[in-house]
Length: 391
Image 1: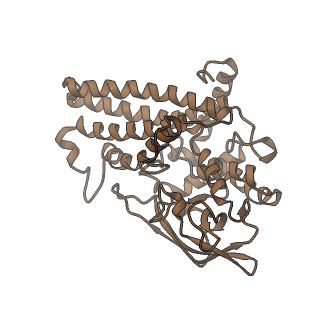
Image 2: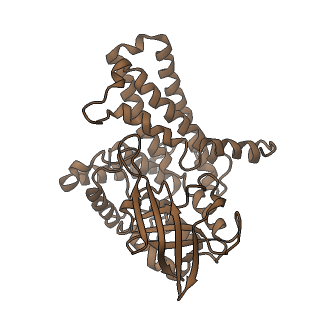
Image 3: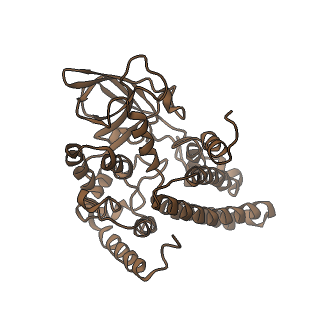
């Protein structure tokens, strides 16, 4: 796959996306531009949920899904173009990306016909939001150490346990939960993948206050929560295979849109350096140039990753890409404060009103942890690509 914007057909598609966004980010959605995103997921929840429904009604959700499941069967080039134009339009950060990008494709691959009929349409319409119940206090990067348990009783799975770092759980209708359904099982065996409603007795969501002062991550406690026996993806005990398939969908075409936002952040840092005179310092000027060069490399690496995903064979590029962009973003956060000098140490206002640069520096540390920590990505590259012995 080459540069996605070069073909005439792609240019036409981009124009269609651009025109629709410009026409619809108006009226009730005029104030939605720029809302949400890392460190700011508390912003405009209601208007962003309304925007999800608006996108779904107009057919701009789930673009890559097959047509028979409510998608548009969009090519990878078209999906990349959409996410880039979406970012350029400063459209609100998506509330439905976990449903659309993770559980939706997993349902298409592993779900029964009944499950697909029940769950896919409301995801496409932007009517039901999802969160991901993977990480636990003792099972983060080591997901095979999951201890949340479930047992069948009276035609329902009864769930006990705790999940943590659950993004958007406070605004979600459903959670896909990896839990242990075979007593005494260990590691990858005995796990199952359950679809669990959030609005019920036995589910408690506790927001986690982050360094940014915001709370898009949550703890989720299951104390006798229930879901019908039919709400299992794959067979009982097959949860590890299904969970790994979900992770394979996590880094798709949307990464190109993410890089538009990165570029915007870098441009803001450069503008600050020009205003403060920090760009006159040869060391800082060199760091700014290096950040720009690495962002260009990031795009080319992402396009290479898209090629492997398009062939249905995600390889080591996926881990390389995650490691690369998360470490780059962390360094950009540090650079954003360095070009401000001493002023970066003072909040914009009391008691804890952070500037964009301060929020970037603090939240970007999370980038190197969630969706597979940098340490885990290095291990994957070392062991599975370079053939080095396991540590």
